[in-house]
Amino acid sequence: MKVNKVLTWMIMSMAILMTSVFAASSINIVDFEVQTDNGDYVLLVSLQNTNTSVGVYDEVSFKVEGEGAVYSTGIVKLDSTDVKVMTFNLRDSVDSFESLKKGESYRITVSTEADSETETFLFGNEKDTEGLDLILEEVSVNSINARDIDTIQVMNGEALEFDLRLTALTDVSDARIMVIIDGYEHENLLATTDIFDVKEGKTYIKTLSLNLPSDMDNEEDYVVRIIGSQGLSGITYKELELFVDTDRNRVDVLDLVMTPSNGVEAGQNLIANVRLKNMGQKVQDSVKVTIAVPALGMSESSYVSNLNKRSTMTSDDMLLFVPETAVAGSYEAVVTLSYNDGYSTSSEAYTFNVLAAREVAEDNLLVSFKNNVELSEGSTIEVVVANPNGKSAPISLVPVENAWSTVEVSPTLAMVQGGASTTFVVTVSPKAGAQGEKDIALVVKEGSNTVNEFAINGFVVKSDSDIEWLNVALVVLLIIAIVVLLSLVVSIAKRRNDREDDELSSNEEYY
Image (cartoon, rainbow, N blue to C red; front, top):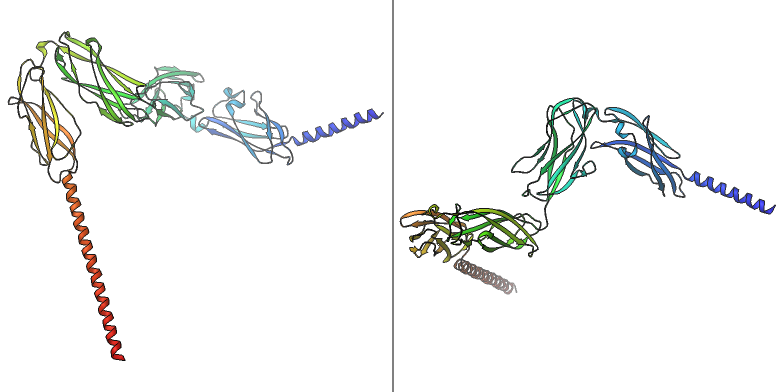
């Protein structure tokens, strides 16, 4: 009998406990809204725990009236009585999403165990679809779904693949879809589909490919637009942003300049300069530039220092000797850049010509000099003039008169043998007041004929004499200031003494 009473008591206690737990498991729906976001439908549900003493558990579900099964979020726990806002995507919340029709209204109900709310929404804004032929349902870039993000990160030089999912609202013949990337200054970045026909209510998948130029400005945003042409009167689209990034360390070869440009005869020299640009994220302290012609066993190197981000520089002259055994024809010249302490390289291939002897120009002289030099009193610049011809020639380097400096050249005339070179020393003395960037114009003559005109770019710096005169002027001004100050002190002291003498004289007369 006592055991039965105990069991009865335990059952009643558990029943009371279960009743209190279920009574406490009450989550109310404070608010429910359906909002659109770039073609998606977001369900905003505000939930509140009505029990002030304990946390509660419940299940949230959605159902579109007349459209299939409900969707359950699983168990939701609310520990406090504060209102909690939860968001869900309609596409993921109802099984019948694909069967919903554009321009129709639907009623959707959100439910918990203790509460429910219903909201009516328009699926597909009539304004957005009016007069359109195609609805762009989905866009992905390199398998990244653009429905979930607005900005996609890519690398300059990368190949992009756009996958488009489209639904036709009407029959269209000879349609075409275009992908346009705005913001690249050198050309239009455009990809198009082939012409195709669409039927009302059908869904189509189209793929377009587009290669990004390797010289696109990095760390910048570019706009992607998807539009229709040909027979399409309209297409919905979502503007995307591409954030174009670049490698941490990257230096590109822009160009190889060879002098002479038309080629040289076997056994002669040519001068090579490489134009390069830092397209990476880091400054390159030192870049090794190498040009090689493997077929002829030719190779030469130079260095470029302190190449800042997005900066472009040209290497120093590299002198290459074409072997006398070289056969006339075209050869591959490979330019290789080594940077990032030798861990990174980049290369480009070019061609140059070895000419037959009869094809070598008789009046072709090669000029080499260092550009962007600092100029002060008596600055000297070396200019190398090479004679690639078979005969010796009298060569002179003549300065063009200018108003800002005096220019002298030594020697004034040199007989240069065929295949040899000579060095002229140009002495520049800026005149008083000259400053900033200046050009030194020079003319190369073979005999009395002018065969080349060029200019050396320089920058005039203040001379020591200018600095000394400035120092003298400052000292003179300082001395004048001291003399004026002493004069004021003496004058003030004299006035004070005169005033004291006057006061003393007055006091004596009073007594």
